[in-house]
Length: 45
Image 1 (tube, rainbow, N blue to C red):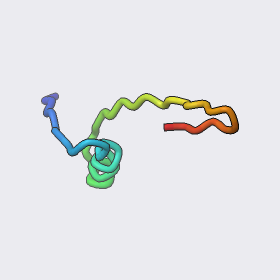
Image 2 (image 1 turned 120 degrees about the horizontal axis):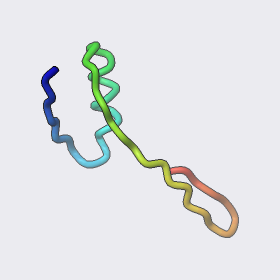
Image 3 (image 1 turned 90 degrees about the horizontal axis):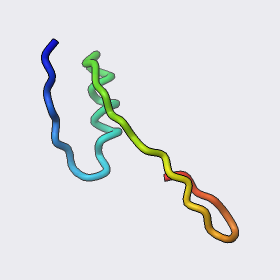
Image 4 (image 1 turned 45 degrees about the horizontal axis):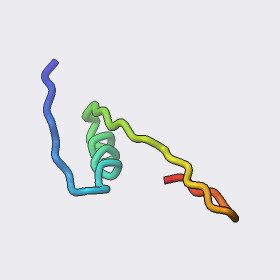
């Protein structure tokens, strides 16, 4: 199996991963889900 690296614009990694999935190209896109907490709410990034 050959590996290729794809450089993307910032914050476009997930969209590129979805495009590759649609084209039946196996890909790996690790993401970190952070929960930011304010005094009144919490938000996932």
